[in-house]
Amino acid sequence: MTQTRLFDLNIEQVLEHWEPEHAVREIIANALDEQILTNSKEIKIYKTGNDWHIRDYGRGIQYSHFTQNENKEKIESPSLIGKFGVGLKDALAVFYRKGIQIKIDSKYAHITLKKANKAGFEIETLHALFDVAKDTNMVGTDFVISGISDDAINKAKAMFLCFNQNAKLLENTSYGQVYSCGDSIPIIYINGVQVAIEDNFLFSYNITNINSKIKKALNRERTNVGRTAYSETVKNILRQCKSESVLLTLMDDLKNTMSGTNCVESGWVDIATYAAVTLNKSNNVVFMTPYKRANLTNKEVEILNQSEKTLIMVTDNVYSKIEETVNTFETIYKEYSDTFNYKFVSYESLTPAENKVFNLKENIISFLKRHNYKYGAQIKISETIKVDKYGMMTNGICIYEQNTIVVKRSVLKDESEYLGVLLHEFAHYQHRYPDNSRDFENELTKMLGYALFDNIEGMTNRSIKSIFNFWKK
Image (cartoon, rainbow, N blue to C red; front, side, top):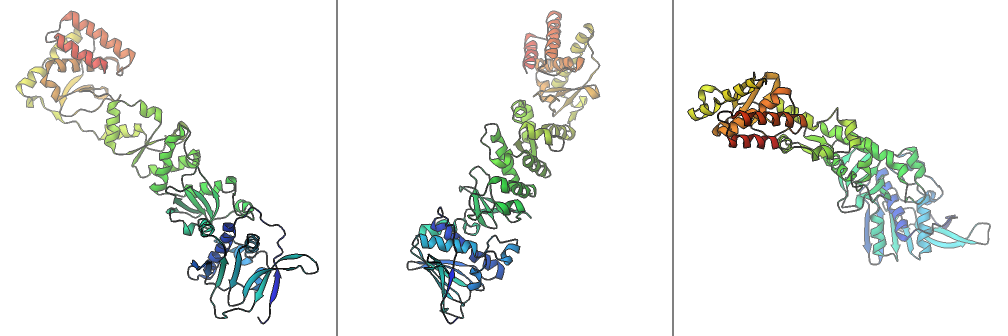
């Protein structure tokens, strides 16, 4: 280039609400785009004296870049959102309006700004002034900004994912990435550039698969893009997530649904359902509604704890969609029942004292015969005892399918407790009524009445008290 050339920036609509940081954002975006397009080294943003530099190491800016409103190369690249010429011109206009000086250097030209008459009109418009390059061997482009605050530069850098030190990558998908945001406000990025802030999101997202809906919503300002434009893509990102760091966070937030303080993502039923089903594949979790958890017995809680599975609370709506395909408490209980092994004790191995107590069963059987109760269950002794199918903490259990009553061996230390356990289980044996049911209470009350009047041998007042204690359970 041997002479000065003017280029009319032809800015018809000044972006009045843009601040200096928005203009800097456009310069940084162009530098990052050039880095990606040319696979050149990382851009630099640094300060010398009172001047801020934004330097890339690409091909270098030239006159032709100002003559096009849209760069086909950038439009066709899936990893870029810049349209070289549009954002740049807007940025230069904002700098000029704010009294901020800008100089641009590349091997092609030294560029500054000035007001000049519009061709064919007696009105002044903003022009780019192209002078001879200072260094024809220079690599890339150097934007030198004078008179801008450090705060504006930092605000501009904060609009880019690559400068966000609080963002930690959690998962990468074909639609984009999920990032934790620490104590920072969640941000929506498109190809690494901030387009929206979401106060009530769990994560930050970087959308890299840009559909037509998003492209249409990417306005000239690149700010405040509406949620409707990107929500489906965010859902697509989450539907591809497999990591517990993402899925467990989603599930953990579900407990806040009841109070209405949950974040947006966990409120999407299809996403919560996906997360639950995917997490379930690890077999390390169990799902339950708050109502179900609140109504577990102490023994059921013990079984849940023994399973060593992470309890995840879900809403009734989500639970209705997943209960057939995930671990529920019923699953845990079945596993417990299927894997429990009794340690039966042979009658011959009982100590004389234990044997004496054990044989008091004959008194109970005689009592049952007199009052026309069923009495044919076999009585076995076990070192260990399984919870009954109603989740009750007990020292005895009636196994209907095997026509057996199992009594824990430790009960044989006390004849009163043994008789109480035995009569309690025979009450169950009659009609399979569960504990805490009205039918069982009526049956046991009737038996206790018979026992009091019959004065069963060995059935002392202490024994009757033991039975009442079982009744209370």
